[in-house]
Each structure stands twice: as C-alpha cells, then as structure tokens.
Image (cartoon, rainbow over all chains, first blue to last red; front, side, top):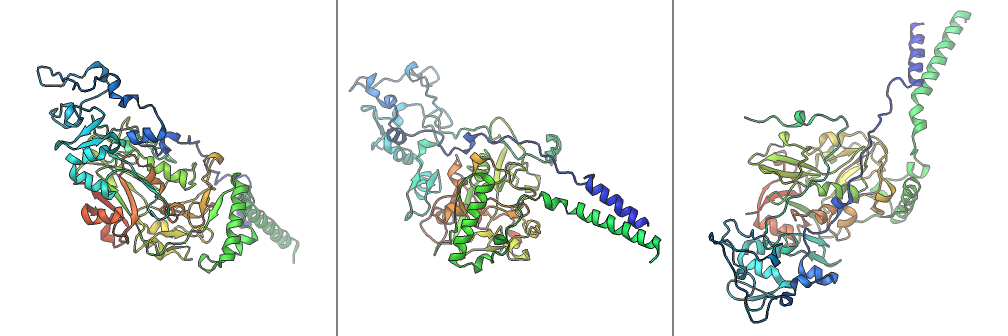
Length: 203
Length: 300
C-alpha cells in the first residue's frame, strides 16, 4: 500500500512538473557585427587605390611647391614642430623621440616618394620595402607569412592568398599596435561576482 | 483473487501507468524526433557516395524546416598530402575575443545557451598558470598592461584521448589531422568531454538557438551543420573552409595577425616556417602525451 501511495505521489509530482523545471534562459544579446568584421585596422595606399577612394591626402604638391624641399622646425628640446596642416600626425615612431625627422622615411625632393636610409626610392604602394629596410627580421617573418595578416586561401592552387602589408595594421608615424574594446566575454549560466571569479593572487 | 487484493493491484497499476506516462512527457515535447530515414542511417564510413548524397539532401531539408534557410551542405574529404597545423603567436594576441565570435558565426554555434569553441584566457605576465587564468575580463581596452592572452580551442591532438573513450566511434581522427564528430552517430554520453584535457568539447543541452539571419548556409556534414540537442560538438578547424583551401574564420578575423594556419607537409607554408624559425614554446599540457597540432609561439 505504501508503495502505491509513493507511486501516486510521484505521478502527481511528474504531472505537475514539480521537479525538473525547464531552465529559463536569460536572453543573451547577439554580438555586435563590428566584432565579426574582417577589416584591417587601417587602409593602406594600395587598398585606397583599389577602392577608388579619395587620394587627396597623397597629393603632396597640391600644397607643397615642387623642387623646394620643406624646412623642418624644432623647438628647444629638439622636438619636431608639426605644422597645423599635418596636425593629424602623431610622431611616435621609436621609443626615445629621436626619430623626429620626416626625411628619415620621406624623400625630400619628391614628396610623393619614400626613401630608405641608404637612398633607395620606394613608392607608397610598396611601402613594406621601406619598413623592411630597418626592420629586417620582422620583414623576413612577414615575407614568410609568420608576421602580419593573411587571408583568403592557404592552398594557393585553389585561390589567391591576400597578404596585408605593414601599414594595414601599423600607423607608420606611430606604429604601436592600437588597443581596442574586447568583444563580450562568455555569459555564465549562474553569474558569479567578478571578485570571486578573480583568481587568488600569489602574494 | 479477493476484492481487496484486486483493488490494491489495480491502484498500483494505475499509479504506475500514470507515473510512466508522466515521466515520458519530455518525449512529447521533443521537437526533433528522429525520422525513420535518419534513424536507419548507416555509419559515416560505410556510406556510399549515393547514400551520402541522399543524407545531404535530408539534412538540407531538415535545416530548411527548422531554421527557414536553405543551406548548401557538402561532405568535403581530406586532401592528399595535407596535414593541418595551427600556430598562435602569444606575443601578438591582444585578447579582443574577435576569434570567439567569428567562430560562433561561421560554425552555427548556439547563441543561447552560448556555445563557444574558443576560450581566451587572461594571465599575468611572467606566469603560465592556466588554472588561475581569467575568462571574464572586460576592460575598456585590451591588451591590459601586465597581462597576456592565450586563446584555447581544440588542439587536434595526434593522440586524442577523446577519440579513445568514444563508445560508438562517433568521433575519429581524419588523415589531415582533424578530429571530427558525426553528429548523427553521437549518443551524447559526454565521455569525450570528460576525457579532453583542454576542455575543448561542448555538449548541446538544448536545441541550438540560432537566429535565421545569422545562419551560415555554407555547411559541411562533419563541420558546421546545425547540431541536435544531446550531441557533442567542438572546433574542427572550419572543415567547410579549410578543406576547400581557405583559412579558418578565426585566422581571417584576427586583427593582430596572431593566428597562423597551414599545411605542415608543405615546407613553404607559414606554419612550417614558424616551427622551423620561431621560439615555439609549447604544446599545451605536452606532458600528457596528446601531441597537439596546435602550437603556441613567441616572436623574438
């Protein structure tokens, strides 16, 4: 008799769904599509040309005069004074502020060209050759595909591989790779306070 | 039979039947009851090309019915002379988690409850204690000073513990090094999840929830076709992309170029160069003898 009472109780419990509620899930917002974008940090000159974008930034002789190298001005500490026409440039290449001469990389007599320290002229569409003239080991890595971004096909018999160049990620005037807001982390089923989720410190 | 014993027996039987009916109720709510076709389907390795064509058709129909999108499902085979290897540059990773979400989008992973193949661990500079790593960091800007980031996903081991424990051979290693799962053969026992030292395998506790406009219709049988409730899934090196010659989604999306992928049997590939020339410091938990095809390396 006790057994049948137990069965009836169990049946009632099942029927009324007393145990084993369907877990109600909190809605999780979909991740913003900008986190799914495969765009590079910056657009390089070849990208702009390919996209048919506005290239007026590269039209130096719209303002400068041909055959008349611009003069550089420095303040008392030897810091380059950036003219207001170029106020978007942050001189942050190198750690000690010593890389403060535009013509370390730009060609003085033809501003539409770049120039390595040993005098080779480099066009804007081949700027990686200029970067590589100082950053040799990194350039070797880049050539082998170990540094920098690649996209497309790993199997080149099936499709093209697209190798991004230095300035797709690094601003040449301030090349440190920029930080960014991280995409949302995992949503926990049972949220714990961040404090208890922190690992205990060793000291 | 006395009147008393008859009443007692019938009460017990009635109660028992009621209990049985009630306990079977979840079956009634099952939205994805197997069709005869799926139930009778043969083991993946025994399917003839004609069988496979039929199976792919069936999957396309099922997906269309459930998610409202007609997908293109293929069964891509491993390529000859190809063995995939993944290299991840810990000097370059900034911990932005874009790979996590690109992976979710590419591979039709459930949005709620969340299933994500990649975990990004934040660790203090100078340490490599994965047990004290943080998953839930959320600063305004990454990388944070004093920390480095280590994404972990399926390591595609050469000696995979997950494959050894599967009681029904629903998961195995293919010739190109990818450990795959047949979602139609998996019984959901979760042994593989327990066996994996990298916590790379995920279980579908519910039917995956994927909004219609976020479905990736380019699917493959062993890859990113939507899973059912009650089966395992994990990273498969984006089999639907990589066996067609393309890079995985996480490689494409990494803004820092920290992720490298390729064919280790090709001496000119990026991964061959990295393993030859870089400081490749670990296969994660290499002391376990799993021999991952996933390598972490440093610049300099």
